[in-house]
Image (cartoon, rainbow, N blue to C red; front, top):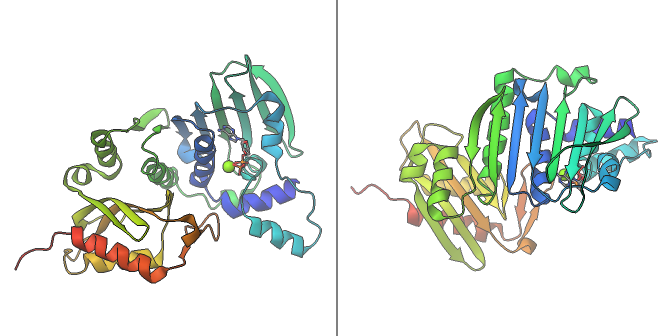
Length: 325
Ligand code: ADP
Ligand code: MG
């Protein structure tokens, strides 16, 4: 089971930011509307996430850590099958196979909080009662302590933190109804309060993408044949290439077809050192799209690629204010 977990971990637990992505998604799945992150030393020393979600009952703590753990790897074919399954149902098991993990939880229905600790190589889980408010905390210490090869690939504390920051931004732009905070080495660096009004959303947009974005962004709102596009873009673009967020049915994607449509819409209006800057949300019937070709990548396949491409292009082109000559 441990080997399988470590292999799965290699697939998606690439760096601290990927651990954080999995843990935050779990908190969101649990219905949390407040998620706090505390990071030490770029995440390789310590990652703590605390949420106010539904929690995990005492009886299921151990299961949550060991779910889908498999002892079935006996030949290469099996191995490939497991890799192709990707990460579903394996995040906690995988993370705990390459770090020291503590899972603490209290569902509202339970008077006492319980803590499960995945200890050492055999992954024996120890349970103990502790004090904890309603919700769940996961603490991940010493990431890759037992996989030196992977540890070697960790970059500087600063670089790893930048990846974490970016991961949190992406998620924060997809869930305005959830409050997020992010501490690094004891310092509160990001705080995105719940943002349900239009004004509050605009404020979060500034916090995540910067003042210019918050104040000058053009709103996009377009609909055509079951396709809906919402969001913001910066008419003049940005010198930074990082202000490019595109969500398909709520999930952040990087996709060639989409990029092409966007670049085409911005064509001829950006200064030479500027890149398109946008936060856009495309919604369409789930049947029209295959997401998740690989869980760690952000690929997407549209059944009506041409229609989607042209819709995005037109919606943006209509919104972008072209200079008058
Ligand atoms: P998956 O999310 O794919 O089910 P994970 O390994 O990420 O697999 O999590 C295993 C299980 O642990 C989840 O299905 C869920 O039942 C439980 N769980 C994990 N994190 C949380 C959390 N923050 N709050 C409530 N339940 C959680
Ligand atoms: Mg999960």
